[in-house]
Structure formats: structure tokens, C-alpha cells
Image (cartoon, rainbow, N blue to C red; front, side, top):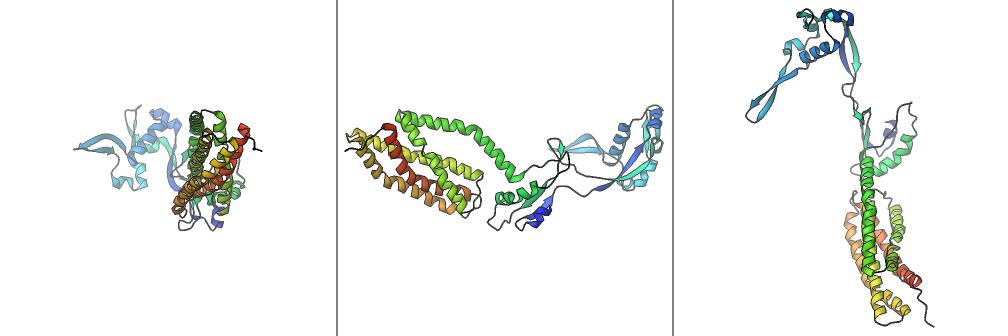
Length: 333
């Protein structure tokens, strides 16, 4: 917690361990209790029923169910000295005997009132929040604190895990990556059926990695983390880039079928599609601007805006070049 307190961007630092409480624990006399046919479980159940209570039935009042709890009256539960006069049933003697006959005394000790576990292992959760009124997100705060916290030496048997938004984002990404390959496979098959050719499909799909240039530039320039929302933005971006490539390739095919020379068809199609492709990209980019002030949607907006802007310009250059290379289009003399 000292690492978090030293960071000016960490607020509301806390943990889930509660203050330890005093507990009066009877010392069980096993040899004496065996003579009376009493076990330690009998003593535990007797004390639990006397002070905490035990549900022995349910009372129904119309549609309301209320439990019937058997325990000592309140005036006998508030004073710990009443334990000395309590009696427990002895199966061997078939009568009640003083509880003191099966105990050696009482020990006062401290114990944790609540033990938190995860995957059946005890855990201590230390939490902190970013400034809710600032521009910093939980992801950026976690990235800044992670190297310092992971450098803390841990005793044998202890280990460190990151939870909160970091864990939720990781689970969401893992779930997304399970189905993403199948989705991309269907998208690739659709482009193959659309052009009835693998070459054209490869040309279109080779434009998708160009978005990485713009995405990286935008995230670094605006100091935005690449989280789950940025990943969703990149997946959406791949569909937009495929659309631009399909529009450009379709126009090349139209020019080719009109009887033009292959080289001129590629050039004319590229020039004629500059305005539609660029205008479609500009309208999408302008639509993302209102999301920039929002901390949650900012990574997705930055990813789409910069990725689409860079990739659109590069698509208008790369697609004609790849088409000429794949189809061996020669420059006319």
C-alpha cells in the first residue's frame, strides 16, 4: 500500500481485511468428555446454538417466510460469565452436566472475523481508484504502479495477481480471441466468393495491417492505452478497410471489362475512387470526434480515427500496386 500512497494519481486506497476481534475459546478436556460421551463437535454445536442460534423451523405469514431460531435469551447472551452455569447433555449419563466438567478453561485470542478466499486460497485485496474527475484511467494507473508493486519481494508460498478492470479486460480479450479467428475466416471466405478469386481477396486483406501504422501513431501521440475498447475499435476498423479495398478493386474490374488497357484501367479506377473512399473515411472520422472526451470510449475513437485516416491514404496507393504485381500488369510503351 505504500507504493499506492506514494503515487499522486491513486485515490481511495483500501483493502478488504477487517480489524481482528477478540474471541473467547473454551479449552476442550477430551479425556473427561469421553467419560460423558461428549465430543468436541457437541460442544461447538451447543455453544453455537446458545449464542448464535440454530434454525429449527420456518413460520409462514402469508407469502412471507420467517425462520424460527432457538437460542438463549438476550440477557443470558450478553454476559460471558453465564457460560459457567450452562449445562450440556451427556449421552452416557442421560442427563445434563455443567459445561465446566468437559472444559479446562477459556482462552482469549484474536482472530479474523472474515477470511476472504479465491480459488480456495486465502487472499488480501488492495484497491485504489484513479482520479474520477481527471483524465487518467484505471489502465494507465495500473501500468504505472505495476513495475513497482511486482518488484516487492514476497515470502515463500505467496504470489501476486492483478484483478479489477485489468482482470476483467483480460477475460474479455481471451473470450474475444476464441471466436475472432472463426469470424475472420468467414470474412475471408466472403471476399473470395465476392471476387471469385483468391488473388483479389489477398490484395484486399493485405491492406488491413496498414492500419497498425495509424493506430500506433494515434495512441502514442494522445497517450492512450491499448485496452479492450481499443481492440474493439481495431476489429471494427478491419471491416472499414476491407470495404475501401473492395470498392477500389470492383472499380478496377469495371474498367477492365469496359475494354481499357489493364494499366490505364488501374490508374483510372484509382483516381475515380479517391473522392468516394476519402469522403467515406472523413465522415467516419468526424463521427468519432464526440467520443474523444469520454474516458471509456476514447481508446476506441482514437484507434478508428487514426487507423482509418492513415490506412485509407495507404490503401489508395497499395491496392493498385498489389493488383499490378499480382496480375503482372505492364506499363504500356
